[in-house]
Figure 1 (cartoon, rainbow, N blue to C red):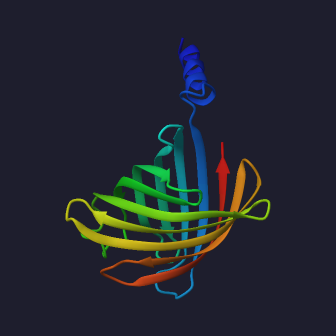
Figure 2: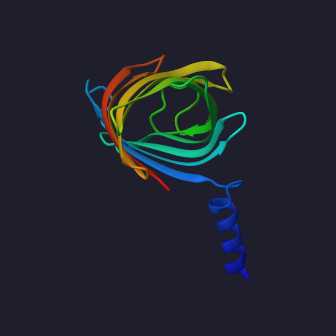
Length: 194
């Protein structure tokens, strides 16, 4: 009986187009170019659902960032987000997430505790050549408990997608912690689509 229920669930969620979901994983290595904070390994898993009208993409995600210099969790996020294309290349997004970490002394809540924040994202996706695209965006996060800005990130990367199921990226990220240090990173990443 359990196997039958699992097979029905798989058919509804992954095969039926009405309920179809996509699973994506992104692994990134962030090289700290200023030696301010240390290199970071970042892993993000999302479950995405595209809605045709009004052309929204809704996702649930887990995003974990491990600082390789301190051997501590830089940031761990668990949340939901929605993205909408405004025109051909411009898009906006909004997410709300539970945030935690061992190195969040620049945040408005105590290190080791959990809190909720909200992130607004605006960006551009511009395809060029056959398999390449440029992705540039800004994210601004506000703590919902203290109603205070916590961090802002500017990100630009070139994405190469040779096959539908894999993309690799090379880029740059600037993290402004608003109430503490800024860090610049060179990034390299891989994204898998299932």
